[in-house]
Image (cartoon, rainbow, N blue to C red):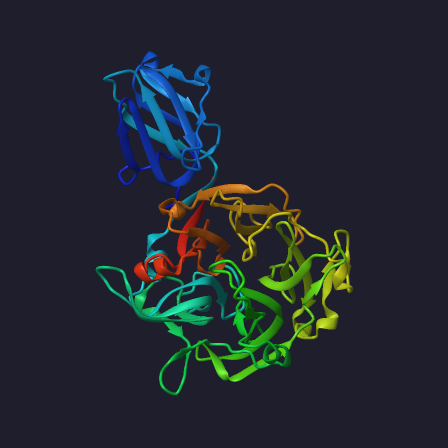
Length: 468
């Protein structure tokens, strides 16, 4: 449903709870709000407060709450809001509430896409979830014939009991692939792919075969973003090896970056044409931070032959860096140029951060339509413990990405049991006009919780709706 500035939000699906003289409203999504109007006398309202993050309320200045035509009007000045709390005098209830949206970006859970990955047999959960258009055009084209590849990290293969949600006979592999025909979340259009041993045991879709990969005992690939160039799929996975001394859920180390590619045949990745090469794209930069590339790819309408490759620098927090190359030279790593904060240079160690905060997976997208047309949008999930899905808006492929716009509160971790949310990213080519489809991952660091509840470990989707 398209939302326009000045619309009144439908309140038939919101969550409402009452406690004494408090009315708490969960809008389920978050919206830039203009005003709330309700049937109640001004002197019957004790306070109105709001928040995006649950229980982090801000109280509306009482002097700004007005009475108009026997109704109370509460201003919000475009604040991004999910929760409202109205406290009234004893035995007074709020009647005929209207909530009016302002211009900005709404974040609304997309249950159709989320349900597509709620599966009980075969592929039963993973993280990662990059999506790659097989035609190489990462924007909405309203074509029902388009194909896409989904790129997943650690994946459960097996069954989930439909009643208890317990995992049954599950195996975890390190990466899998999905393919979908069209741009709608339709069950009969999606397939999942992994390799199998001769005895039928599931195996990762991509296995290390390079010199670097083979030099690491029990190595495997953690897949990053993908891009299609001249009808060939490219991905730059991390070479990962086990580290039993790491914290629960993070018992691994990264050793390098490989470039994996396959031809595209009949809307799928052709394993027979697979090629793998080691890269020099995992290194220590001049600021003594581990730096690597492949976390996100982007192409623009203005320069279709250039591929922008985003990478990460790991220190006290994760920062974003960027390189670029002509598509014909993609695997000629000596031709790559790196942004040093002022200009493009060929010395990778001098690369400089273009965003001081990001998650370990993200997306950067060129906006080809809508109110942000011509802008560059970086989607990520903050690691500050706030569970906020946020975005930066920049004027160029190098930003500047300085002040995040906080849009959505991921509430899954409220359950406890080691559950956390992470690694949000956008899917422009699966989005509708004036919208941006976004996903994020949900996981738990407790293995026994994984086994008890196969519903946790799968992506969730949110639609960002541009309101103007």
